[in-house]
Image (cartoon, rainbow, N blue to C red; front, side):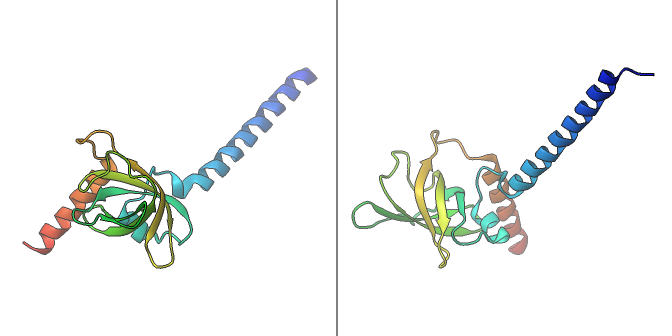
Length: 149
């Protein structure tokens, strides 16, 4: 016959393991859609990000798309090579922000499909491009080459 305290210890360990597994499941299921650091314009279109949902939108600032508005207003387009999204921002422009450079805009889509950013994060190194963006841009180029041989 086994002592009572040993049975109790095994029961507590089993209960703790079940609780830990349940907590891990809940956390992973809650974070399932938001595991990526940012959405590219193509991913945002495919996943149909609902207006008002706060996300990070990452890509390259499209050449020729930057428009300075009155005051601190700024409009530009973020592209991943396959799709582009219009972005509006009101605030100080980061020093490293310019056309053809990587950017991550944090904010929400409005019902018209424009992304209203409240924060803009410009990259720090002119040679840096996020790996996810490189993969999407290469896939877009391959698709264009296949469509136009």
